[in-house]
Picture 1 (tube, rainbow, N blue to C red):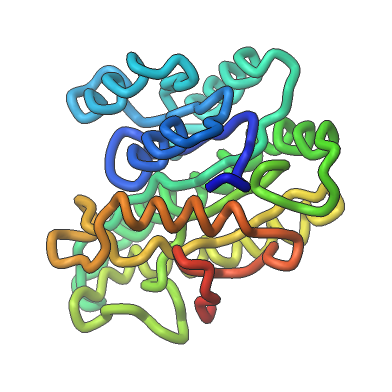
Picture 2 (cartoon, rainbow, N blue to C red; picture 1 turned 60 degrees about the vertical axis):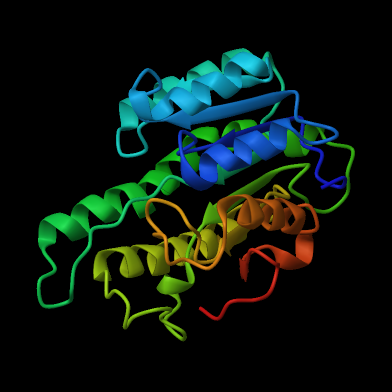
Length: 256
């Protein structure tokens, strides 16, 4: 993680699972970011207690309410981050917040599909739009050449379950709403990489592995801390050649 050196990072869905562990490992690193914006739906709720405890121990962590499906919430969060940065840009945005509705293809509903798309696709799009001016500012301010996650980047947490080639673990759970949303998120990432290429903003979709989170379940192969350790190690090595790609937690390419 020595090569990952962003001044500021924002992580959505930071109150549990991968998001919480990312904040924990970022702040616990040898050269932690000066600002870590840990966002979640309900900062005062019981499910954010671990995050609040962590923030009390580390002044770099700023907990901010951000509901990725609510444009008003996103706008307010962007204003708060802009104020806290005091004229500086935002180096790294990690779109981690996501949901899934257990279902089969036969039982899938419009309501499930719309709710999951709202959070997993439209949410990351709107969050990225809101914070792009700050990310562009970080890119402009940086003396670094090329692209990196220490300079200016958007990392979208995707899933191999959304790979049309692999369709990971379909026999274990069809979860059509989630799979379709992650395939769409991959396309969003590709579009972002093309739209922000001239701004030198790195955009990558990343599969974190099958992880032992509330969503992944106890049968998952990877522990949360190991997945996040590998994710942070991988993003520290990403460069211009990787923008617009789909990779796993170890940096290996995942087919679309």
